[in-house]
Image 1 (cartoon, rainbow, N blue to C red):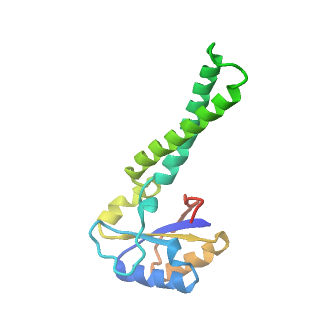
Image 2 (spheres, rainbow, N blue to C red; image 1 turned 90 degrees about the horizontal axis):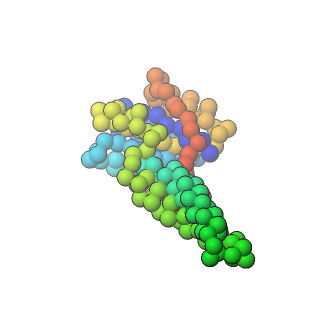
Image 3 (cartoon, helix red, strand yellow; image 1 turned 90 degrees about the vertical axis):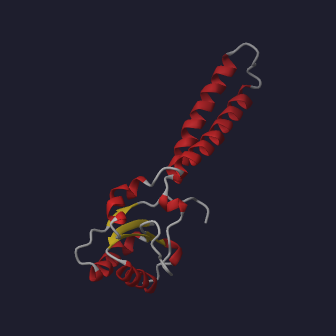
Length: 169
């Protein structure tokens, strides 16, 4: 899946585009709208915490850093005299998994409180009343859907990225 995102000038245009995306068989769970705080979105699919924050990238970074730290701690523990080589594998595995778990938990906590880095450039436009639409679409349909969007907003710049979505539904 590719994530396309673009700014829509108001709720009327946003609703038309979302309706056309739905008619183009893009499921509602793959469409997310970010608007200024307090803006009623009515029946539009509002972005949730995973789209508005850096939760997923922060968890990924936490797993990597925590796992590496745990591995180093395990290596230090094995190097100290009381640990024997018989249990060395268990010590390394335990410290690495513990470090990865703690790192992912702490990373997730930090990530929930940090705004999404990919949408930072749109903050001023969102505060001015525009709406940011994110849609996860099959890569082979990106061009077709860009044309659909440009019928409503000819001057729009549709940007693309890989979505950061969890492996679970």
